[in-house]
Length: 155
Image 1 (tube, rainbow, N blue to C red):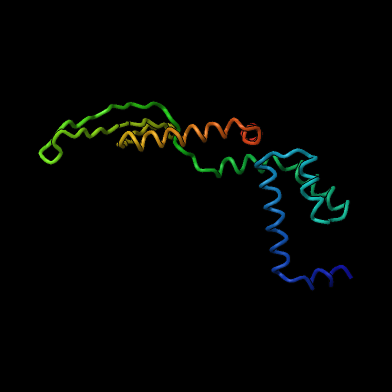
Image 2 (image 1 turned 180 degrees about the vertical axis):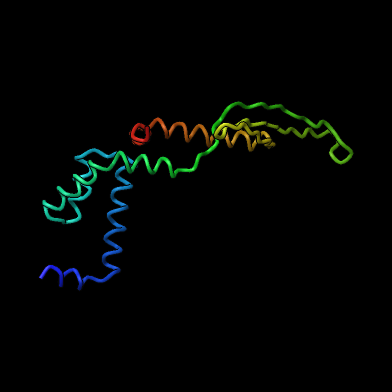
């Protein structure tokens, strides 16, 4: 009978099944993948057509709510407000005769919830140039079609 069938399934098997279902629904909801992409994703799992249809309907019925819950659970990170900076140059000292030692000091103002905070950072120009290159590289990658699609689906 059906009851005996389910009683013979181990707890680990059931746990893995639940974990897999949760992962499938949360990841699909995070990316807001289309109906076709969802079907393609589950088709390779080898389930029956009936089960595939049930999973698709489960996804379509719950993706907005899952996304909303995931949004509430996400940490609230600070956001950029403004930046003040200055270039300090030490021209000479007793130990550094005739040697210029530049430093860039930045004050980063951030908004978090209703509060505003500030972080003071100091670096040498070479490290700042490296940081700029890394940020430009990240910005370039954000312009790629793959990243655009992900960002569009995050909104």
